[in-house]
Structures are given as structure tokens and as C-alpha cells.
Length: 436
Image 1 (tube, rainbow, N blue to C red):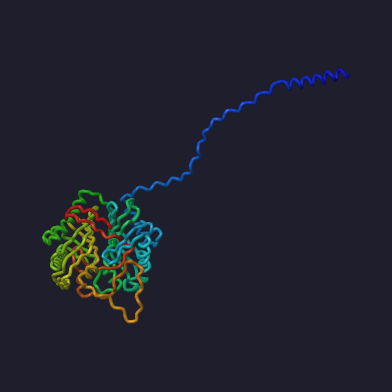
Image 2: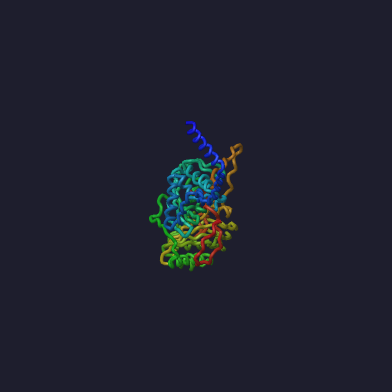
């Protein structure tokens, strides 16, 4: 037994000795560096694509849009109405002696809302709409009842509860896309406005309740017929500037109707229209029309410019004594043609500016001693002083086949920048004025 254990022990000792004598195993080599793995970068956060801007409005869309703007005003939806104007829009009322309003908020708050307060039922109805590129020209019937305070340059005008109804012309220049008003001008007769409210004894047109039977919406097409109409209006203006009565007579239809919106009534028929032209030429021997722009569409031409002349002659038919003064006022003239002749003329001008330049308006009444100062007017436009004009001012309202009469008052929405562009020769299609 001892022997057996000894052999086992020697075997264990020998194995251990053998293990101690074997060389140590070489260490494993370090693994080769791993090849870099390309990792795609995370996509950068991107904004949602902006919706594409709508294409410029078509002429028909512009015609409908301007009427929709009036509908928004008529319903007193001023949120929608404000959207009709560009952020930096300007609005001017021609020859009212007030600077243009600038900025959408001012146009809406200081004009449209002011008159909506004074005339809660005030509405504008489009009688004629002409679209020519970015220009939109509209004849608008304004109607309403004076139920609220109306700011004026000499204080607030208390409600008269009287109705107004008269035609105004709105000239809009849109933004390039045709979807917002960039610049706007309004021209109308304030003398009519004052008389209809009972604030002036001057003779004026009665309140207009109904608009035109037809309400054309036209687009300038540059057709040969439109070019011929532009030439016909140019010939009429040219004949007037030359004081060529036979040529004036030849340019108008036998049944011509001349509507000077600052005069109490229309002149109907060639004989009456020519007599009015002759009287004006006698009263203003150097009278002329400086036509600066014209737009044609269908049978209509809208032209714009300045009327100027020196009153060195009496006008007995209108009881106007010569003043020796010079006038220079703006006008817009809407002409309808038939067979190449002038059939209808609607003349828009500020006759009160005309009468004022002739010195026919009295100064505003002085405030009574101890009277409270007049309130600061809220709006940029307001009626003229409600003082009776001199007798000769009444005659001024009955003058002119193109460019003079009486005015100063409100129109909603408003109006815009002074148009001052180089004139074009009589008879030539005029380039629309640059609206500054």
C-alpha cells in the first residue's frame, strides 16, 4: 500500500516538474484596429414648405374683389374690409386740402370707421367698374343717413338726420398680385354733400336714391375700338383746349348728356352742352384741360388731369362776376361713346376747391367769446365749414364742361396718392399716371 501511494506521489511530483520546465505560451497578439464604419448623419430639422403664393388675380377676379370690398364695408365687417388694403396702403381724397392717410390701420380707423359712425347705414354701390392692369376705376353711389357725430375742421358736426346720396369716383392701384389696395384716390363733390345735409344754401343735386340701370363691369382689352374711343376723347379735349366750338360741336352726339356732379342738374342735348362750353370759355379765356391719363374699356373712357384758367371775364348766365383769379383743380372724367361721338360725360371734381381758389367762399365764422375750443377732428377728411358761400359761389357750381365746380366732404372707404404723370398728346392713348 505504501508502495502504491509512493508511485502516485512520484507521478504527481514528476508531472508538476514537467509542467514547470515547459516554456510559457506567447501572449496573444492585439486584434487589429477596427475599420471605421461610416454613419449617415441625422437629417437636419427642416421647416415645413411654405404654401406657394397664389398667382396674380385675373382682371375678372379683380373686378369681383373690389366689389366684395365694398360689400364688406356695407356690412361693417371691418376685419374683412381691412384685408382689402396692403399694410402700407395710402388713401387720398382729391383736392380736399388734407394729406393722404398712410397705413392700413389709419385708412380704416381714421376714415372708414369714422364715417360709418356718422352714417351707420352708409353703403357704396358700384355703378361702373373698369379694370386696366393694376388700375381699377369705379363709379360708386354713396348713400346713408347722418345719425352720428361727424368730425370737422372747425369742430364736430352734430347729427342732422338727413340723407345723402351722390356719385363718387374711386381710383385704386393694386399691389402687383392684384389682391390688395396699394394706393387709392377718391374724388367727389363736397358742396353736394354739405347741401344735402342742410349745412350749405348752395344749390346742389338732390339726394340720389337709385343708381344706374346698367352697372357695367369692363376690362381694358387694348382693342382697336378702344383705341378709337381714346382718340375721340382726345379730340374732344383738344378741341376744348383750342376753344374750337365747331370742333367741340362735331365731337358730341346730338343727344349728349353732360353730368357735372358738382352742378345742380345735367345739361341735356348738344345745344345746351355747347352753350355751357361757350360761357366757360368767355369767363376763362385761357381755360384748358391738361389730360394726364386715360383708360378705355368697351364703350367707356376714364380720363384724369387738371383744369386751369384765369377768370378774367364775367359769366352772366351764371351770375358770376370776374374775379381775376386763377384756378387749378383736378378732375376725373368718365365718357361713354357711341358711333365715335361723345354721348355721356360724368365729370368728377372738387368744386369747393374751385370756388375757394376764386375767392368765393367766406372765411369760417369766428368762435364766440368764451366758447369752448373745437374738438380735434378724428378723421383726416371732413366737411367744409357750414357757412353760407358768397352769391358768386353759387354760380361756380354751374360751370364747366370739364374740370370745375364745388366740393369737400367724406366718402367711404377713402382715397390715395396724388397722380402726377407726364401728359400725353390729345388723341393718343394715355399712359396711366404714376401714383405717388
